[in-house]
Amino acid sequence: MPGDNLVRDLLEIAVLVALGGMVCSAVRRLKAGRVHVYRCHACGRPTSRAYPDCRHCGVTRPGRPPERRDR
Ligand SMILES: [Zn+2]
Image 1 (tube, rainbow, N blue to C red):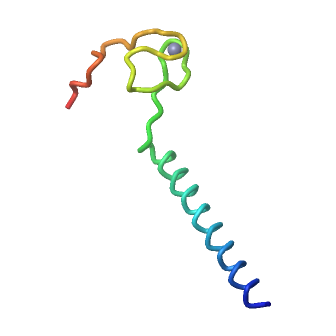
Image 2: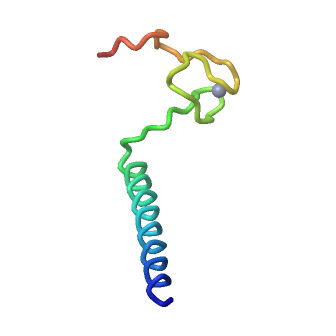
Image 3: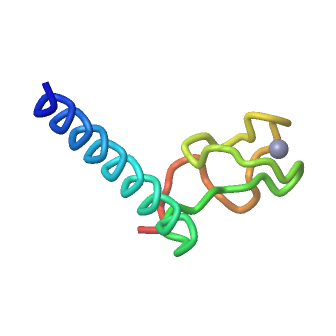
């Protein structure tokens, strides 16, 4: 039935548009700097700010207590 194909095509296009929009907004957020990737000062690799130590080389971040007290 041609109607079924049309519905399926429309659904596929809708999914593609939704995925593309999500990717575009994520890239835009990254470019705007709102998602900041913390990089280790010793090895330069991206690590998590949730941990006081670098997960790659184990170096502790300088000048920062384990708890966030800057707020
Ligand atoms: Zn490191």
